[in-house]
Amino acid sequence: MSRVIIFVSLFVFLVCFAAEDNPVNIKAERFEVNLSTNYFEANEKIVIEQGKLIIRADKANYKESKNKINLFDNIIADYLEVKIYCQEMVFDREKNIVNAFKDVQVIYKEYIVYSQKLVYYPDKGLMIFEGEAIVNQGKNVLKSNDITLDLKKNKIYSDNKTNFMISNGN
Amino acid sequence: MRIKYFFFFAFVVLLYLIFLRVDYTYKSPSKTNEPNLVLLNANIEHFLQGELEFNVVAKKIEIFDKKFIMHESTINSEDGLIISADVIDYYLDRGVVYASSNVYFKRGQHVYSGNELEYDMTRLLLKTYRGGEFVLQ
Image (cartoon, rainbow over all chains, first blue to last red; front, side):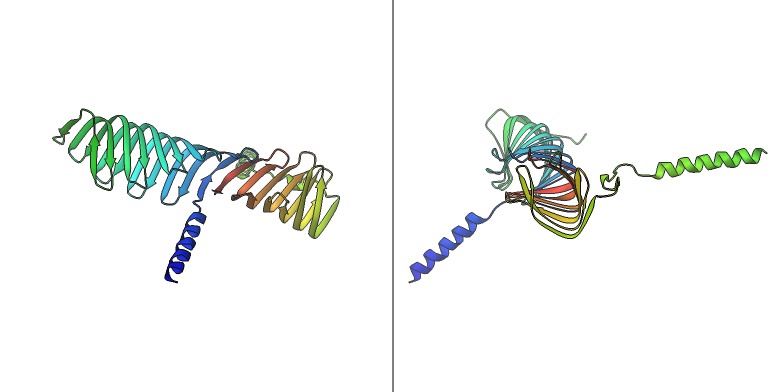
């Protein structure tokens, strides 16, 4: 009998979990939507909210079949204590991955990271900076290629040659 | 004698200042001429025009030669379209809806709420203006 109860409880839990959707709210001054192709374009004062992730930008488009939101110009993304500034961003709704491009700047606690490309996994708390990246942590400056910042473990990894400097504060 | 010119000049300046304060950003196309027919508390169950078919519930419908102006109205169609707004202008020749003030739009899973929209019912093209919010599932 208890097995049946456990099975039913598990089934109900799984059904509830599967039915839970993850809607995204998009605010903007202007929208243009083609409802036959489900292609969305948003312009001016864009604010996108999905769960705890909030992204602001000047332009955005979204094609439902691809389930990715492309954002352009003056982008600011907030997720808990992480703040990302950049000029281009792709938010993969399905995989919950944020790709940031062009003049990427990340601020997280005492870290400030500059790069040209970032792949951010908010759920895992992982930030992978592709290409050259500069990490400032207080007086410490770290310069390397392909840096991974693990926010949960508060650690930085790099397989490449790394320059580590302690600034004298000047 | 000169004081007369001064008053005239002041009057012109006053007119100019009043003119500057007038907001021309949105002209309602609603009040251009008298309607052919006015329906109050209307409930049109089957509005048919070509391939378009929808239902309208409105507090007031003004019927002109080429357009309907629906006040405090809701449009429903069988494909799941819902548009409601304080004012909805429907252009018969183009199959285009202009909705303004307290606009709510729903089609399929997509929901919009905002201030102003234009929806081409035949080409399924939606444009919105003056701010608003979409909810995508």
